[in-house]
Length: 205
Image 1 (cartoon, rainbow, N blue to C red):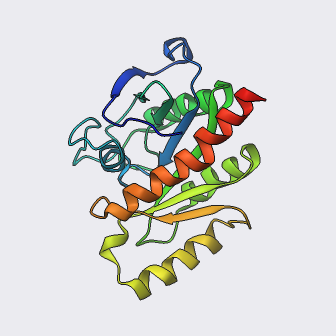
Image 2 (cartoon, rainbow, N blue to C red; image 1 turned 45 degrees about the horizontal axis):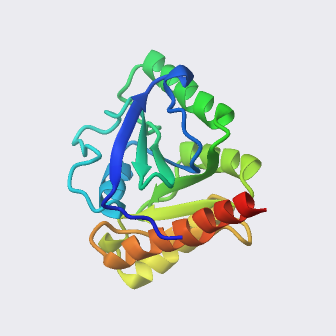
């Protein structure tokens, strides 16, 4: 199944369950540290320049943003974690917001984790990956900013990420760069092959 990425919109920005959209399409949630490049990734894969706001201030996104893609798929941008400059109260509120979505949304079919390909995953990254492994059939990780590494460095860092996050056989690790068309293709190959087709098969069954 193909989606038309020219038919996309920010449906709603929510902070609590009562504000979630009343839709039934499959949802892919994007999770990662505050400076990992989620907004840039969303703009890249949806072929937009500023649909998702890219801020120079990490941790600025404090809502759960629901992007309707061609009435077939919802991309859900979760607030970034691990930004130490925010107050303890704010961090706790964000954690509650994220947990409420992850634990209560039946439309959620996969949490896609973003990690920075240049660095070893943080303890917050590891904690998120542990949650994904507990709740999802398999893990999907995109290693962002891979254009900043040589091929040799990237290969070594992907191995480090695999080991640090304890990725298993069957888990998916994909290098990603907003500057590379291959990354755009790899994202939609995963979405259309592993998400939309599975959802269509379940509907037919």
